[in-house]
Length: 431
Image (cartoon, rainbow, N blue to C red; front, side, top):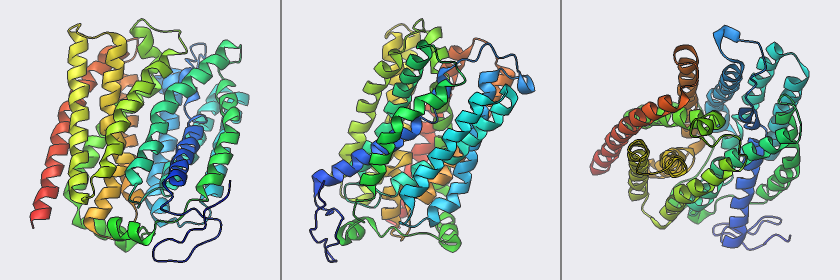
């Protein structure tokens, strides 16, 4: 592929880089971001496809799969906490090498999980999750701060909606081929390595945001400790409200994702490899179409408030969809799609567009990765808390009633927190 040598506004042409105004090539960059993160999921999520019912180990009184999920999420959550500082200060150089090295390390941990005894496997799964929490911030840094960031961000966010179901389907096929549950996670990731490398090669050829991008969305630069502290000090209340809602959404989304096989079994659809992808493709289309359309809203404050509206709409879909299912108005597949679309409609803006626009509204030079990782570190702490509570206080085959109860609670609280955050930004704009 030949690179465009067109000059960007405010600067000379740079050989080997694409023009910021060559939209088809930028869209190819968005596809590369999607593919890179999609490939990462093949090293993280296949483990959720197995049940590990034959393992007699019960650490801390937990069943083995719950212990594995908790250890992996603990590693992932710790990575998000570390990323608050690392991603905020990470420059443009070395991102592709860092992504490849982190994913390679996580794969070695999966090989260790296959080779070592079950007790040591818990440690391996922790170190599988630990490197992967950095990947989102590194990949998102390629697409943030642009006038088309909503479109590129929607393409990137499609990866974690679609990939989870498709990777689980791939893992199920490998299990059906006779591969053991301990080797399945490591083997599922290998076919995705060429996709990962090709995606990183393409991402490295994206141009930096142009002068016009920076004029509309503010410059995106590394943030030191003083800049991070000032940003939080001046915007603590709306940030805390948004993060509180995100904690609930992350816990719900992770619970739905990690125990999808068990939930489908409770709904009478267990044993089908295709059901995971069948339910998630419509979810991705519904959730991301609205998010991508926000690119048309040029005013940053209006776009930020519109994202608050989408989060509220997601909460409404989650709550009312569950109510309709309980009253028999919709079937299991439609309920999973409707509540999944609501969850991701509310969850997805936090991973890209919401904080990208917030940086633009605040008018500070910085990067959205810092705010994303604050939200993520908090969100995965909530996910761990829900997993531990479920394992200790609600064990056994009661996942479906628990999910339904949590759906109602999350819907009400997320709507309340988000409306309060929107009021903070409206009052700020009037001042």
